[in-house]
Length: 115
Length: 113
Image (cartoon, rainbow over all chains, first blue to last red; front, side, top):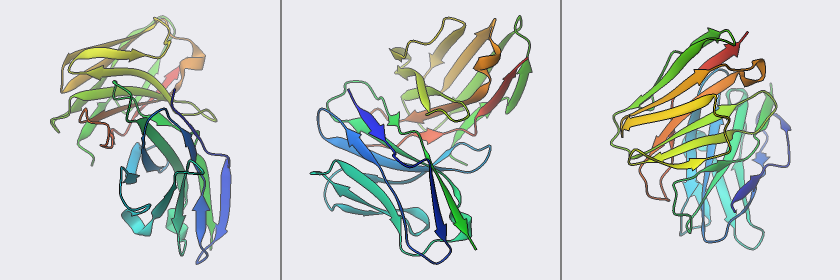
């Protein structure tokens, strides 16, 4: 069975500082990993994904994520945080061995950027 | 805009009412999903449809009844709901391949009174 864990309910960062939002996963086969962002009363917006290839993936709004197979992690990062980055962030995984198109999400991490 | 449209955006219903949520996509995707998002709980996968066939029912109570008449439309029929069913219901779609992301609608905010 596939699963995703986001160990931090909330991350607080000062504007201009680097940010990291943590994610670990568990799958039977190879993982397809995704990050999404959600603003209040809105649906989820896709940020970036890892399928194969380079472990560092770049996405929208200056975000990037690093795939680490040995640590089964896919942490989201940004070198310099903006107040507008404040939102709810979800990590998600699909198992390459799963015959269904199931995407499982983590519990979400609320990112708060203070001016 | 993601190309996935959900209606209505907000819905208030009594426990004895019957209502339906609608989701529509014209992205050519053949997988569609219903998720439930409650306050302080993880995003819960409810149902998955592939090529109009239900491939996942995540132990959802029978008061929630999905319908997928074609690959572009997905419904969630609601009847005799409970107040704890109040949540944001999100629809998503994706191509069936595993390495593709899902596209989400804006959600329907459901309140059961």
